[in-house]
Amino acid sequence: MLEKLSAENIYSFENPPPVKNYPLYWWHIFAKIMSFTLFGLGTVFISIIAFPIMKLLFWKKERFRKAGHHFISIMFRFFVCFMTLIRASHLTAVDKKKFRKLKSSIVVANHPSLLDVVMLISLIPDADCIVTSYLVGKNIVHIIASNLYIPNSLSYHEIMEKCLASLKAGSNLIIFPEGTRSLSTGQNKFKKGAARVALASGCPIVPVYMGGNDKRGLRKHDSMFKYNTRHCYHYEPHMKDAIYPEEYKDLASPAAAKRITARLASILSDENNKEYIKVYQ
Image 1 (spheres, rainbow, N blue to C red):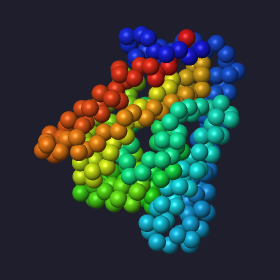
Image 2 (cartoon, helix red, strand yellow; image 1 turned 90 degrees about the vertical axis):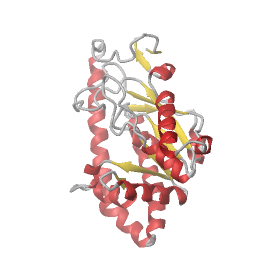
Image 3 (tube, helix red, strand yellow; image 1 turned 30 degrees about the vertical axis):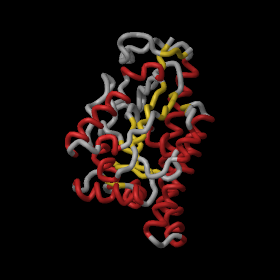
Image 4 (cartoon, rainbow, N blue to C red; image 1 turned 30 degrees about the horizontal axis):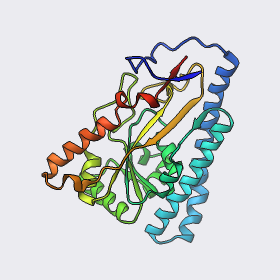
């Protein structure tokens, strides 16, 4: 059974309990491989078939991006349902309606696993995000990433310009202030990018804590064949109260960005969200 965290050390996953049900454990490994295989096939389908058709239907760049955001959200919803069906993962979001209604908001979340962005985009129909540079490199994923999202390989001014344009068009911008997935030992230091975008755009920041259980096998530097020893991956995103940049209008921009980032780090810290972290029992 999964219970709410009560121990002092919230990073107690490095020595997992022994496997109790080996058939179920190996099924989880197989389900994970099936999920990643489907994701790869879906990427090929979208890049080679869906996108060319959509470009004929939505030939204006902004209309294509909007349609593309909604289409990827639908595809990710299907992917999440597939993972639930085969018991690879389970998504529980009590605020689904709130996620659906977001507009021109900066969604800032902690980043414990590889699938966090998939879960968020499946909940948010019009979601933009800043993607790592290797996704826009020489691989098929770049067809999707370069057409719909913002690569972090651009200059600061280019990234800021694209973020502001996306928010102005009504899209929601997903940012992981850690910059990369959390380590097994804890969260990375939060960067100020989200705060700077909020101050420049005037758009609200919506903090989302990605709760759930141990994401062994999906964390930074984990191998494919690591897995939670007793349960499928549980995802429980919890939307927090919005932060409005006008609250900091009396501060200079650097000081305001620092203050907002510190507030986000506190709101999204594992230490302050123990009730949303599940552990083995």
